[in-house]
Structure formats: structure tokens, C-alpha cells
Amino acid sequence: MPEVRIREVGPRDGLQAEAYIEVGARVALIADLIRSGVHTIEAVSFVSEKAVPAMAGAAAVLESLGPLPGVTIYALVPNVKGAARAAECGIDHFTVTVSASAAYNAKNVRMTIDESVAEVAAIRDLIGPSPYVDAVVSCAFGSPYEGDLAPADVHALGERLVSAGANASTYADTTGMATPRRIADLVAVTGPRIGLHLHETRGTAMVNAYAALELGVRDFDTSIGGLGGSPFAAGAGGNLSTEDFVHLLDDVGLSTGIDLEQLLTAAARLATVLGRPLPGKVANAGPRSRLAAG
Ligand code: COA
Ligand code: ZN
Image 1: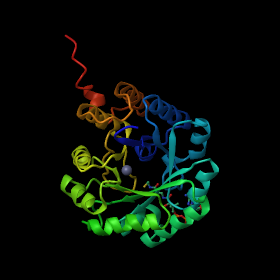
Image 2: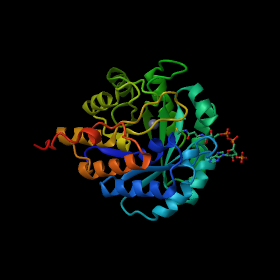
Image 3: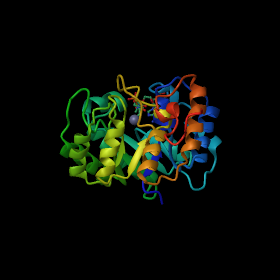
């Protein structure tokens, strides 16, 4: 069992704000990630194709992947309709997106927070007791619309979502407003058994992850190449880069089960598909263990 559990969100969060990429290239990315030792992947979202054109073709991606023994595939869903479509494709791990910011929730999923909580209960009714549901609380460290949100209120929403039928909560810094002290403020309320989903919008994703590690948090969402961002978060920077985080974790001696060199190969292939360098740092500089020629 790895000491730090990474859920790779590149194929979903990483690609959702990009121009549409065909199913074959998305499947190849997921296969590359699995080859690197990544065993938990948010692969698709079942959302409106009008709202997020890049995520069209979720069913085709899953069908083309086929059964993947030992790999946990998550699908993001905003509502019962999305969950029903995902369940039809055999999905048994769901991330449900709900925002701690009422204004962001309205823009992102067109629901009030109470409606989203009710939607989690309805999703649980639909899928039955066995599937795993992770409630991802977005804007958990502040909202571009409402400003700072009290950690106690953010935690209370996470708890409400668990009471409504989620198995766990992940707290997402959707718009890059977290800082180490705000990570500490939230973990002081929630305890360390939470997931964190961090964005690099203001250059703080890695220091936030490190602060969380020191507080005992062990579950992180990251994205290959540091790609990503919500189409509904203006100026959203990418996610914490998987390879940058694995590079750091290797150095501090916390295992992930992921092979950094293979991951760098995957990142290089993705950069070719997208036709530009990705924001991740280690992919561009090379790992510290790789010596310069001559
Ligand atoms: N997947 C696909 N289509 C969906 C859907 C889903 N999960 N939920 C609703 N729809 C369809 C409806 O069937 C309807 O289709 P029609 O126009 O052909 O009749 C249409 O979308 C509008 O339905 P409605 O319930 O009125 O939805 P909406 O317009 O209020 O949009 C969401 C709500 C949730 C579907 C939309 O806001 C969305 O997909 N948001 C996702 C945002 C996202 O992925 N953000 C990034 C990740 S956090
Ligand atoms: Zn994100």
C-alpha cells in the first residue's frame, strides 16, 4: 500500500478546459498513466456536452478502456442523470462536485447547495449501497464570488454530503485561493483523513500539498503535466502536477507506487498531443537525479 495515495485527474480535470481531444488519445493517456503505476484515475465526467464540450464521449472512453483489474476508475458527475449514465457504463467510483460557494455552484452545476446535497442522496438511492462516492467540495479555501469561507462551514458541508450518502469528502482549491495557513485552518477542523485537490493558480499548490503532508493528509488529486482547470473558474491555473509531486515524495521518502520516469514519458506524449509544453516543472527540467550531459 503506498504511503501517499494519488488520484490522477488529468484525463478529466486536465483536459476539460482544452479543445476536444479524440477518444483514442484520451484512452492512450490513461493507458500511459496505468503503465506508470497510477492506479486511481478520474477518467471522465458525465456532464452536459454543451457545458463542457471537451468531456464528450465519456462512454466511448470507458468502453474502449475495457476492464482494468487493479485500477480504480472514477467518473465525475454533477447530478442523478450523470450518475445514471456512468452506472450504465459500469462505473462504481463516483466523484460528485458540489461547491462551498453558492455562486460558483450555481454557475458550475446550476443548483443551490441544498439541491446539490439532495442530488447526492438521490445518486445514492439510484446506485445502491456498494459503489463509492467521493463528494468533492469545490472552492473549499475561498470563493472568487463570496471571498473567504469559514473552515467550519466548509467542513459542515463535507459532513452533510457524507450524511446524504457520500463515503468521503475531498476539499478542492478550485480557484487557487489556498495557502499553507488556510490548509492548516481547514485540517484543524476536519482532521487529516480528507482528500485534497489543489490548483496552481497562484503558485501555491506544492507548498499547500507539503503543508498538508506535514499535517498527515495522505490523499491527493493531481494531474499529469500540471494541466487543468475548470472552464467555470476564470484564470484557473493547472492542478498540482503529478510528476512534480511524485518527484518531491520520492525525495522525502513517501511511497506512491508510481514510476517517475514512466510518468515523464506519459507527460511528454501528452505535450505532443496538445502541441505545447505543459506547465509541470519536472517534465521540463528533468528530475534532480538526472545529470546534465558533459
Ligand atoms: N450529462 C449530460 N447531459 C445532462 C446531464 C448530465 N449529467 N444533466 C442534464 N443534462 C442535459 C439534460 O438532459 C438537458 O438536455 P436537453 O437540453 O437535450 O433536454 C440539458 O442537459 C439541460 O438540463 P438541465 O437539467 O436543465 O441542466 P442545466 O442546463 O441546468 O445544466 C448541468 C446542469 C449540471 C448538466 C450542467 O451545468 C453541467 O454539465 N455542468 C458540469 C460542469 C462541470 O463539469 N464543471 C467542471 C467540473 S467541476
Ligand atoms: Zn480541479
